[in-house]
Structure formats: structure tokens, C-alpha cells
Image (cartoon, rainbow, N blue to C red; front, top):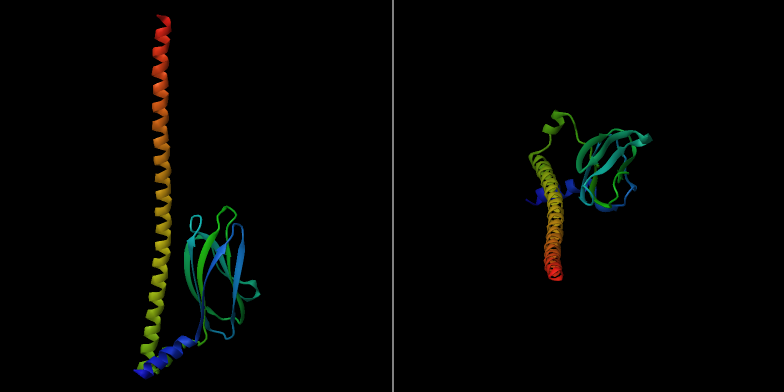
Length: 202
């Protein structure tokens, strides 16, 4: 049991991960960078818009020499994993589009796996059973974390929808009540003016 725990902690230590939340102003472009030091490292990139506007944002991922790897417009969230075959700096940029006038809060996660995964099946089969179990557990934990992030993002969007609907209902009710009072006042003055006109004729 202790051996498995040590192996799990060792496996978790080989990955560098950064989870951040950032407010991106209207018409602002913000980039974040990570360094790949060995060819074949796995880079994962996850983002989700939590607040602001229509919950969408433009993004792009660039490799060394400004080589574009991924690009998207008006995306609400994304989850990408790729193999970094070139050494150097990788850029992850968010841009709050020209058509948007609202600030947006983006949560994103950038992780670089320092240990290169063996692609050969024969090499994988040589690993002992404990190591395979640790890798499976780590993979399952990663999936659970992604699901939790997805549901938290959905919860934030649904809460924003409920708040917006509540605000609209309140304002509609207030305008409707004012309209009823205004119509009642106009009717009172109209009937009063009608009877006043009849008296003046007599």
C-alpha cells in the first residue's frame, strides 16, 4: 500500500500544472506561456468562460516560431491535448472579440507532462502491475477533475441565466404594475372630465 502511494505521488510530481482565473477586458488580448524542454512531452490545455457576455471567447495556441496549432472563435470552452515535438515556448492566448463589450472571466489549465510517454506497446507491457495501476488511477483522477470543472462551468452559466431571468421578470412586473396604475389614473381623470363637461352644459 505504501509503495503504491509513493508511486502515485511520484507520478503526480512529474506533471507541471497551472490553473488560473483571469478577467479579460473588452477588446483585450492576453497570452500565457509554457516551456517545453524535451521533445514528445504531452501538453494539455483546458479553458472555460465562467462569467460575462455570452460566455464565449476567441483563443489560439501557438508553438515555437509563431506556428499556429489551434484557433477558435466564440468558443465557450475547450479541452486539447497535443504532443509537443518542438522545443521552445508555447503561447496560449485569449482575445475578447471586437463585437463584445463585456468583460469575461476565463478559467484555464495548462499542464506539461515532463515524463515522455512510451508509445511502443511492448515497452508499456514491461511496466509492473503497480505502476499500471498508478497510471490508471491518475488518468481516472484527471477525468474526474475535468468533469468537475465542466459541471462547475455549467453551474455558473445556469446561475447567470437564472439571475438574468429573475431580473427581467422583476422589471417586467414593475413596468406592468406602473402601467396598471397609470391607466387607472388616466381613466379616473377621463371620467371626471366627462362629467365636468356635462355639468357645464346644463
